[in-house]
Image (cartoon, rainbow, N blue to C red; front, side, top):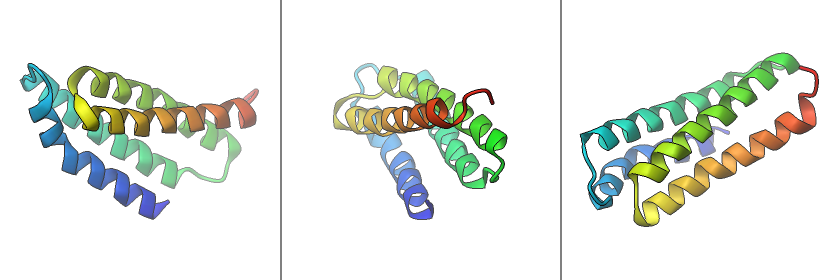
Length: 110
């Protein structure tokens, strides 16, 4: 997971400014929102890596991750454009879908 984490962080940090520059009508609110969303994404990845082996703990972290990815996707969809928008939305929506599946499969009753 460490290699994935580094790649995701690099993508988030490295693309935030160019992606905003391409967004039609990009403003300071979107610039701030994308930076906050990128930070939330990094924190969510960190929490996944630190989740314990306890099933209830993992399920809690996974549920939080799903909600975070939905919030991040909302910001990226609103504030980014072009290839960066498509790439970053695909990334967070893919992660949301993957962990939603894990929650459905493994976290019934927890």
